[in-house]
Length: 137
Image 1: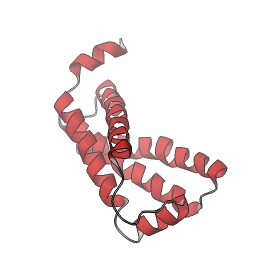
Image 2: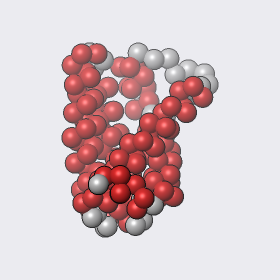
Image 3: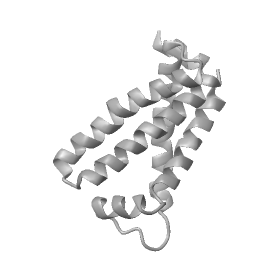
């Protein structure tokens, strides 16, 4: 039954939504003061060039996989409006993004700013994706 939904997906919308997520997150993690707070808490060096392709490509593939799953949810619940997309995006962002970042923080102990920045990114990014998918049916 779930496999039937794959044939009904608008794959152009899925690709555009994944690209939008990637573009948003690229900006989110590169604009001070968020970028500095995130890098400090993540304990990564962001001086010099941007991330290498061996980081960028798997990141985009991950976004594409998650966007496909969100598209399946959008289709299954019949979301078709901006309001539907925002509601779904916030629910997914909080339920998976914020909670996942929080649980990781409990073990990784990278600081409250780290999980808050990642969690907020998830809420906004999932909302962008869900809105694109909901209205582009």
